[in-house]
Image 1 (cartoon, helix red, strand yellow):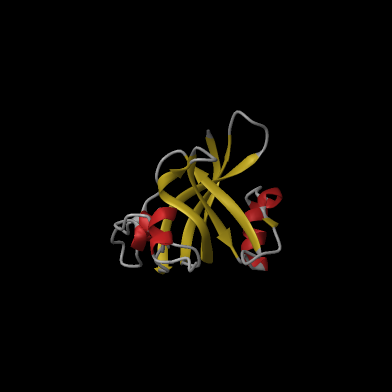
Image 2: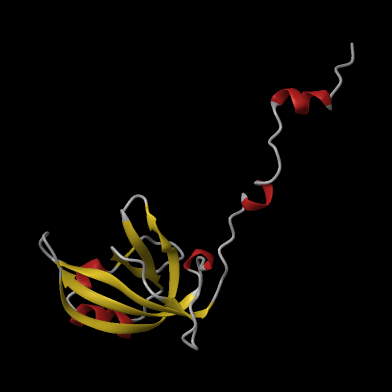
Length: 148
């Protein structure tokens, strides 16, 4: 991998942040830098990453997916470490993006330092129920008596 350039993209919205564990589908640490404005897109184009900027017509607006083989450094604005596991969709950040070339043709977006400026904590909706045992159909049916 040869890094060709790097820039700090400020004020992006993070979606699908895999900052502390690898994204199983990609096999790397990944994050979508979303709701990119014209200036941010121009910066990415100047880095050779213009073809990587896209939209899926959802909450992300124009976005780029950045990847890294190593876990990125995640910090708050004071430079203190932030647990990447708690960074959720909608968090705001300034991100160091590295343009690199590799064994495949093209230029790719690398994920460098992530400074979380506004944290939206990851909420795993199943986490509250993890300590409770799941009911079986028989348990549920005990609560209902069939009148004959």
